[in-house]
Image 1 (tube, rainbow, N blue to C red):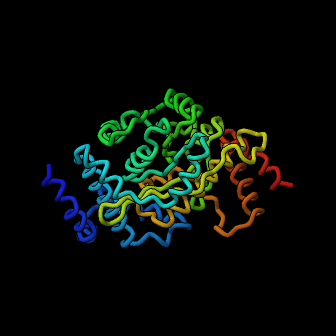
Image 2 (cartoon, helix red, strand yellow):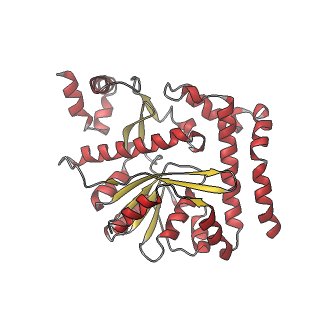
Image 3 (cartoon, rainbow, N blue to C red):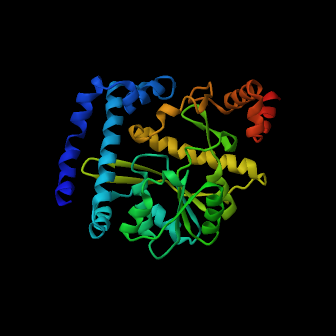
Length: 330
């Protein structure tokens, strides 16, 4: 065990050289970076990133994160806490602690990266004894070994999934707890809404905004990445108050809240895009907005009207777009 632990820092130094050596020889079907580049090249907002250098960066980021996760899982319980406390970098921690001090329920929402589970553990350690902590996962089968990891880290957690998990998550929040979730995937397309994301309309699960709104929670967008030296970086944005600026129309409020959350995701992913896991899915889970990134409000509204005319089912899924379509038609 000790030998395996001591090998991790040495193996980590080989990640970049191996990614560079193997990239030209690895078929696209086995190369996450090359698949990501294929998707990026089809999207105007990200086309400039689609280079072989980026492909290698994706491969290196995933290998480093997997190595770090495996290293953490092998650490004895007494060493795991010390490792997490010394290797977690938390930009925005002051904002998070200020949100915690309000006493309001908190939702930490992050896009999927390999290291996201370590971000959950790090937050749970900060909340020990002060807040009930729950993780809402896509399904019980995809919990990435979290139960054992949390147990060895000495923190209590409630793992939730499915419809029943959403109900229990709301209970946790209404009692002032904290919920961690990753809303950039979904189980059923009929349960999705569409939001702007890298110049496209992306279909995503709308449950995070619903939970935040119903519990009057503070929603904290985050992004978890890894760095050289077996370091985890958990970036937290300024909290979004789900109860502020209510329009009186819950569906419109949920749409607006989700848009704000994904705008924060986009800003952070753009600074370290090699860590996000779902670039290869983006083209088939989204629709082009057909607008330049510097377009003004009238152009945006006209594009919405055109898209609603082209896709009648869009209004059934997102009826709040109807008012924008009417404004664009006047």
